[in-house]
Amino acid sequence: MTESTMKAPKKALRPVKWMRENLFSGWFNTVLTLGVAYLLVTSVGPLLNWFFLDANFVGSDPSACTGAGACWLFISQRLNFFIYGFYPDELQWRVDVMFLLLAVSFVPQFIERFPGRKWLGLFGIFGLPIVGYFLIPGGSFGLEEVQSSKWGGLMLTLILAYIGIIASLPIGILLALGRRSEMPIIRGICVVFIEVWRAVPLITVLFMASVMLPLFLPEGVNFEKLARALIGITLWQSAYMAEVIRGGLQAIPRGQYEAADALGLGYWRKMGLVILPQALKMVIPGIVNTFISLFKDTTLVLIIGLFDILGTVQSTVTDPAWQNVAIEGYVFVAFCFWVFCFGISRYSQNLERKLDTGHKT
Amino acid sequence: MQTPPKDQPGKKPGIIRVEGMHKWYGDFHVLKDLNLTVDQGERIVICGPSGSGKSTFIRCINRLEEHQQGKIIVDGIELTDDVRHIDTVRREVGMVFQHFNLFPHLTVLENCCLSPIWVRKTPRKEAEASAMEYLERVKIPDQANKFPGQLSGGQQQRVAIARALCMKPKIMLFDEPTSALDPEMIKEVLDVMIELAGSGMTMLCVTHEMGFAKTVADRVIFMDGGEIVEQAPPHEFFTNPQEARTQKFLQQILAH
Ligand SMILES: Nc1ncnc2c1ncn2[C@@H]1O[C@H](COP(=O)(O)OP(=O)(O)OP(=O)(O)O)[C@@H](O)[C@H]1O
Ligand SMILES: [Mg+2]
Image (tube, rainbow over all chains, first blue to last red):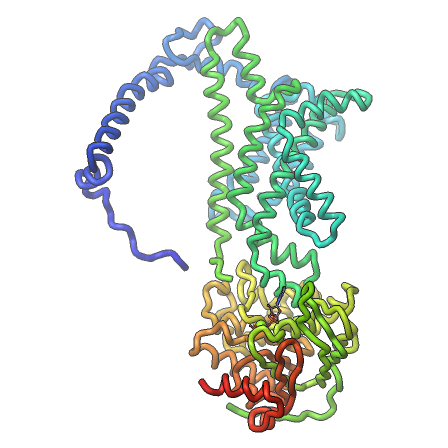
C-alpha cells in the first residue's frame, strides 16, 4: 500500500554519469575508489589462482596435491567423514534419506507456485523429527542400532541446529507469554528462567550438561551426552527466543487484545489466533537472527567431545597424512555454514513479504 | 433518515442492571455510585465531557474493566472474577471501538468469522454465509476478501460493526464509533447504526453525535465527574435539561 508504483530512473544506462556521481564525487571518494580498485585487482588474481586455476581436484591420495593452489582433493577424499562422522558406511543411506526429506520439505518453500508446499513444510516441521528419531539411531523396526557417539559431521550439526530451532520456538513462545502473564507465580518462574539461562554462555551450559551433570547422576550410555547437549542448547536458545517474542507481543496495540476479549475469544484463542500471528510476523527478522546464531553456535559442542562438521574437519587437518590443508578445510566449513544460513535468511525474507498485509491498526 | 419505531412490546426488562457500582483506578475514583437499568431493545446514548468516565463505564459492562463495588448484571449473569461468566457475557455483548481494532492479519471475512467459528463453533461455511449477510447489511460485501489496511476508516468501522454482529449479540456497545473518522465518513457509519437501532437491538452508545441521539435514542444519559448527572428522553434532554452541568455542556457542544 505504501509501495510507489513509480519506477526508479534507470541509471545503468549512463555508466559514465553514474560513476562520476557515485565513485568520483570529491577527492575523498576518488582516493577510496582507486584504493579499493587496486586491492581488488591485486587480490582477485591470486585468489582465483589459489581457488581454481592452480588447485588440485582429482587424484586418489595426498601426493596428488602439488601445493601450488588449494588441495580440494582433501575435501572430496574425506567428504564422507565430514558429512557422516563415524556413521557406518553401509547404514549411511538412512542419513541420506533424512537429507532427501529435508530437501523435499524445504526447497519447495522457495518456489512460489509449488503444489502442496504448505504440507511439505508442515511435514518438515512436525514429521521430519519423528522420522529422524527412528531412522538415525535405529534400534527399532528391524533397523540396526547406531550409537550417537558414531554420529558426526554435517549430519550432527544439522541435528543439533534443527532440534534446537524446532524445540526452542514453542518453548520460547510459552516463556514469553508467561513473562507477560497476570499470574505472579507464572510470571516469576518465567522471569527467573529467562534471566538465568540468558546470562550464561552456551559453553558453560554445554560444559555443565556434559561434565557437571554426570557427577551428580550415574553415567549412562553415551547417547545421553548428545541428549543432554540438545536439552542444554534448546533451553538456552528458548530463553533468547522468549525475549525476541516478548518484544513482538509488546508491540501489539492494546486495542487488539481488547477487541479479542470483547469477542469472547478467551486467553488461548486470543493469543493463538490474534496476538501471536501478528507478534511473530513482526519479529521474524529477530527470530531468524537467533536461528542463525544458534546454527553457528552448535560448533561449540566440540568442547564436550561431539564431532560436528567443524570438529571432523579440525581433527582431519591435523592428520599427518595431509600437509597444509587447514585453509581448505576451514573454507569448506565456512562455505557449508554460509549455504545453510543464507538459505534460512532468504526464506525468512520470502516469508515476510508473503505475510505482509499492511499494518494499519 | 427513517425514524425507527420507538417502542417494541414484549421485551425482557432489565437486560443490563447496574446497581451502586463504583470503580477506582488506584486511588482515583473514576465511577461513583452508578445505577442504570436498560431494557431489551432500548437505545441509550451516553454523553458528557472528556474524562467523565463514559468509556470506562461501558467497558465495565463487558468487563474490559473491572469494577470494585456494586453489581453489574448482564442478561441475568452477574459479572464477577469468574472467567466463565465473563466469557458468557462477552459472547452476548458486541463492542465497537473508536479505533475499529480490526485484526490486520486477517481479511474482512476472516475478521467476521473468527469468533463465530472458534467460540460459537459454527461450521465455517455457515459462518461465512452469515458474515456475508452482515457485510451486505453494512453495505460492503464487495470488500470481503480485502485486508483491513486496504479500507477507509468508515469502511473499517462498518466491518467492525459487522464483526460484532456476527456473534449475534443481544447487546451492542459503541464507544465513540465515529470520532476517529473524517467528516464525510461519519454518515455512512451512523446510517448503519440507525438501521441497527431500527432492528430492535439493545444499544449503549457513547457519542457526541447529537443528531444521532435525537433520531434514535430512547434515553440520553449525561455523565460528568464519574457520575450520572441526568437522564431523560432526547426531546426533554435537549429542550429542557434540569441540571446546571447539563445545560452548560449542551451550550458548549451545540454552540458549534
Ligand atoms: N487505565 C487507566 N488508569 C488510570 N486512569 C485512567 C485509566 N483509564 C482512564 N483513566 C482516567 O479515568 C477518567 C475517565 O476516563 P474515560 O476514558 O472513561 O473518559 P471518557 O469519558 O471516555 O473521556 P473521552 O471523551 O475523552 O473518551 C479519566 O480521567 C482518565 O484519565
Ligand atoms: Mg472515551
